[in-house]
Amino acid sequence: MVGYIWAFLIGIGIIYSLLSGNINVINESILTNASEALDLILNLLPIIVLWTGVLKIAEVSGLLDKFAHLLNPFLCKLFPSVPKDNKALGYISSNIAANMLGLGSAATPAGLKAMNELQKINPEKDTASPPMITFLILNTAGVTIIPTTILALRVAYGSSNPGEIIFPAIIATTCSSIAGITLDYLIRKKHQKWK
Image (cartoon, rainbow, N blue to C red; front, side, top):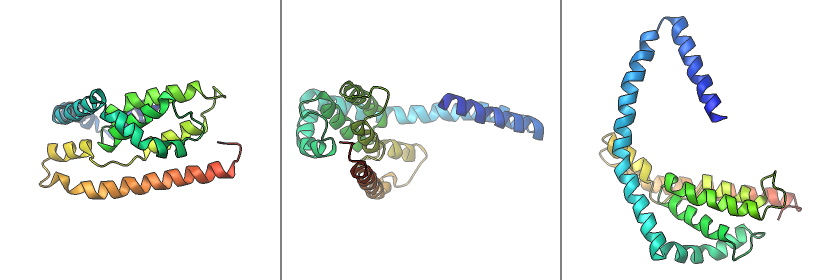
């Protein structure tokens, strides 16, 4: 679906450029933006690789398991219908840890595995279950302590103080997480059939 939206937007842009006589803008944009995109990828790659490696080391060393154990009481409250020994809670913990480090790309595999495990215990296979919805909210609005991707972008574009956004990012993501979880709880409470 997203591919269709992008294709539609690109098509509109090309048609508008043709109608307004600015076809040269498209050619310039294609050539210069491709080069800028490659430069950006090459600047971001080392930081993402570093933090993905740190996350893998944490996983292999058992640190993520300890983090999952630490989060278990909190996750059991958020996901009351998920059994305490279910693998989904471990994957959710890994996803939260990766998101806290600002590693959306590293969080994705754990998030997909968590959704897969939550789907296994979903009684209605064609509908998202309440735990799936809660996890999606938590994943989307998750607290970020170290926004590595944003820091990498700021470094790539020559910011004099790339770390100055860390504290505001923590505040913003904490507020969004609290708002999302609160709204999820209130909607769930309104619909008592949801557990």
